[in-house]
Length: 418
Picture 1 (tube, rainbow, N blue to C red):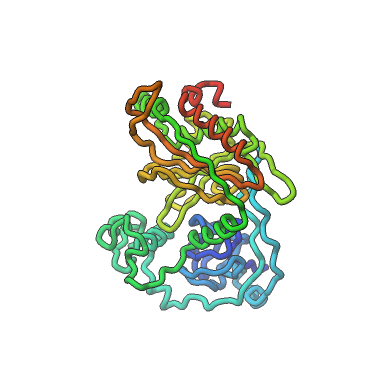
Picture 2: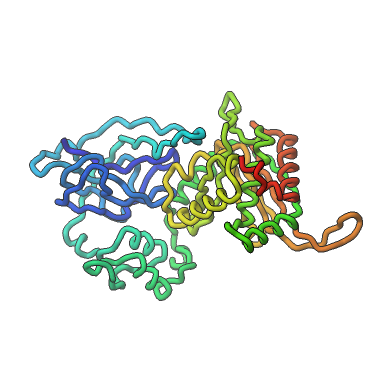
């Protein structure tokens, strides 16, 4: 039976996706579970697997096109099978996926929401001339070239058969455009810059957050002298090298354990209290941000948090996270301190009821016991959903977070690892 390959709906925020590259061409055989294409969602570049075995009989959407979730991308069938019905079939839209909730301890989370079955009219497939005009390149090379504004036709590939690989693009990027140059800088003045999938998702989420959710904010200043000394000691002596953000994640998890009223969501007619502390860490990217989630932080040591956060952040920047790795946070942390930002406020990402904005650690004059000395201070601001939280619980949480970071030995003590 002919199988329809469609643009999936992997998260509740995904409305469309971009077909980055086909890994199979018309006439080639594909096995069930084998990767048939690479797609870009609102947060990541991901492999799309074939649902059934057969021959790729028809490619409907060419590489580089952005289409709504549910759009027919290709048809897989046997060589002698009639695919007319598969090309023209229209199915009733499937319901949108339920909001992703964090997995319970010891329970594996679902890897993706069910795909939508609402299909648009088929689009013309690639002509042989269009296919021949494209230089052979790996999917990652194409994605990287698009990110950095590199013309693939100007690159000589060093991969098998002259195929352009990621390293070729990286070598060409400095001459074509600086690695740090943004898409906006590459466009002529007065040109409209199309929204990326990530920026579209951010725009939708912010409309759902800032307008309907009544925010309030609480700010405190934390002495970071001892925390910085601890971090420097751990980086010097090993066996792991935490960042300031790692220390803040662990301290936040301890504070949330002691003030579980913060680790909640407003769900209309109830306050949902979460059994685990799943902290999202905002990672800035050229076209937006993504928030990979460290699960069950309350039960993890500082070392484990350090290792997991580094891996998640690296893969986030490469757009290689799976949906389950960036959805379902119960609390979020956004740190702009490395950009010398003293203080800012974060917008809540529903359904989270609280988010922590972290500023720079500054060396400033401070007064201690009536005497002035030099100290290290950091401002943090807690954004809260007033439907679920009040100022008193927010202030109590920040007071505990401040106490932990100002006396940080419990961040590495056995009793704090759960």
